[in-house]
Amino acid sequence: MQLRTRNLKRIVINSLAVCLFLFVQITVNAQEVVTVDSTGVVKNNDTALAVQAKKDSVKPFKRYKAEGVSAVVGDYVVLDSDIDKSYLELQAQGISVEGITRCQLLGKLLEDKLYAHHAQQDSILVPDAEINLQIDQQLQYMVSELGSEEKVAQYYRKDDINELRKELFEVNKTLKLASEMQRKVVENVEITPEEVREFFYSIPEEDRPIFSAEVEVAQIVIDPEITEEARQNVIGRLNEMRADIVENGASFASKAVLYSKDGSASKGGLIKGIRRNSPFAKEFKDQAFTLQEKEVSDPFETEFGYHILYVDKIRGQEVDVRHIILFPEVSQATIDAARSRIDSIRQKIVDGEIEFAEAARTSSDDKETRNNGGQLANPVTLDTRFDLTKMDPTLSAQVYNLQEGEVSKVFTDRDYTGRSKFKMLTITKRFEEHPADYVNDYEKIKELALKEKQIRAIEKWQNKKIRDTYVNVNEDYHGCEFSSNWVKR
Image (cartoon, rainbow, N blue to C red; front, side):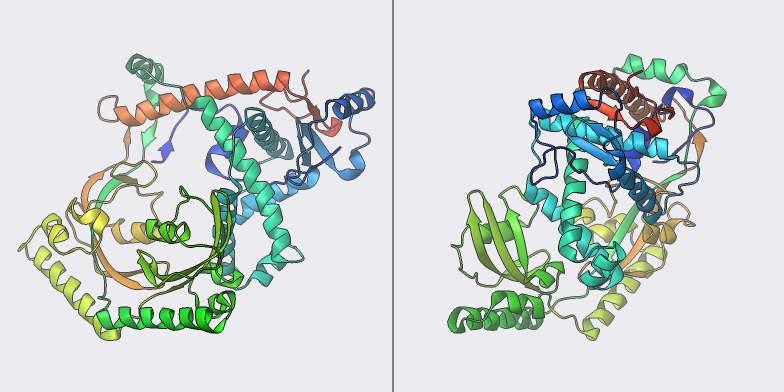
């Protein structure tokens, strides 16, 4: 849902930093000042901090200026270069930096560090395996965009991909700690119906929000058939690889580099730090925690494809594995048959022989939506409404000009494996742009009221923690009009 307001002062976030936190992630580095450990965080040495504070009591930050330090928050440091990188990251995400000042970005970075610092103080844990998985996904996307790991490293001005990976680890760890701390601050904030009513009617009628046009969308998906012959061909190839590895001592990693069809191939199929609650397919985790070290699984199937798996190392509750994944080939004949099938279904719907919802229930190959008549759920709001201005571009292009009940043309979509599938969509309900109505838009108004209350809770927590935490801002930024009292005037 995108909200456009004319002058909604009650819900304007007083801190640009909070706003940026909600809508973008800024690439920053956590770096060291005094004594550091392997995570890039200043060691909590009370004596060292006391000596440092004494040295800086007359001319704060003079000793750091040569290193380009903008501020220190608890165990963390913000460098001038972090602010520069924040601009670059915003631009890389297609966000205009016009009107965004260095002071505002520094304020955002200070917030991140404050949250991360107190997350550590409160013993909030973020597993390294979770961060590494996130980095793997980021690097896979970067490689898909730029073509190779070498080009990715060059683009980010790093000597090699390992240097970039190390920086990404620090960035993601800090941001995840900050996110978890902020979530903890607001997790118990609730809103009552009376507070929602007071929130809405306190807004002058001419200033009430305008809700964008929204639609409810249903789909029918037809997948080209994967034949039993194609499945057996893939299983046979995996069995041949397994036999060569087990019987002839061939390298699993080398075969993964040569043949595996996912992003881990470049690392010899290596996936580190899998836990039982890691976000992998159940069948994949079952194999990982059943095999012994150096053992190779038989071929097995997940919703993503066909695998063989090798346990590289067992480390307590974590397992490092290597895997090879292959996808069955789909023939042109089965692709043509799938297209013919969906064209026929569409024609019956258009001719009134069958309702769209009934056709979805009886014919769609998408398991998640067919039992609901093809109705799509918004993954962000978890309801069935989609803001037309914030939909996936592929989806939006198909439904933007559709009227309620109209069926789109058949179009081709591809999953991450590159496999084609055919889709058609319909608008089951359309909601035009309109001023907020207390009765009809109660849930959205409740969400806005809750967000405002959460922001107040965050501001209260932040102001208290700033007073209680070692914070030192370089005198070059003392003229900034921060939304919070970072310079402790």
